Image (cartoon, rainbow, N blue to C red):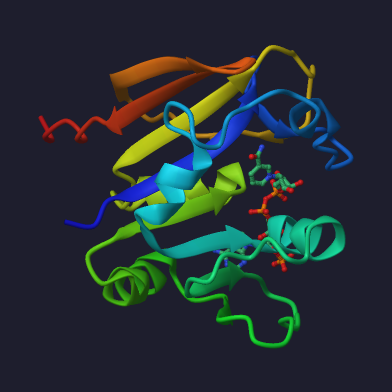
Length: 179
Ligand SMILES: NC(=O)c1ccc[n+]([C@@H]2O[C@H](COP(=O)([O-])OP(=O)(O)OC[C@H]3O[C@@H](n4cnc5c(N)ncnc54)[C@H](OP(=O)(O)O)[C@@H]3O)[C@@H](O)[C@H]2O)c1
């Protein structure tokens, strides 16, 4: 069954990028993509992904070959362009509508919410987030792009050390029934 997973790396104080969108605090650290809850195994289970415009533009500028060979949705109100051959859709539709399309495209594999945090929050508040997997870097940033700026109750499923990171996999707890 398809799960919708926010898989990301964060500083200890809950930021996924500095205020000026730098990831130097993250990319300079040791991490084994084939290690516990590493990127290789995670990506193998992903059938579709979504991200916000800032994340997409960061990828275009810094790591243009990264876009995985999976159908991907980019949330934006701007007229952005895709690199040649990329399976990308730009959308400002409601996340619930996009989620249904992503699940269909994923063909039973998981949906990856790449970030940023507010976009993931929009999925969470619609009840469309199943798991959060965070690799916690041994650093505090004091500010920046937030990990998940919503209240979301979580249950720890798994945790491990991977290189310099502590990785934790959480299930999103079901919303309490109305009183
Ligand atoms: N640590 C990590 O592993 C990791 C992972 C992912 C991202 N990052 C970084 O974290 C930062 C995230 O940036 P961010 O907080 O600005 O978040 P973002 O989600 O990447 O981008 C926010 C933009 O997405 C668009 N958007 C969001 N929701 C939308 C909706 N419902 N409909 C249409 N458009 C929507 C808007 O763009 P428009 O202005 O076009 O409307 C909004 O300004 C980036 O620097 C990224 O590189 C880090």
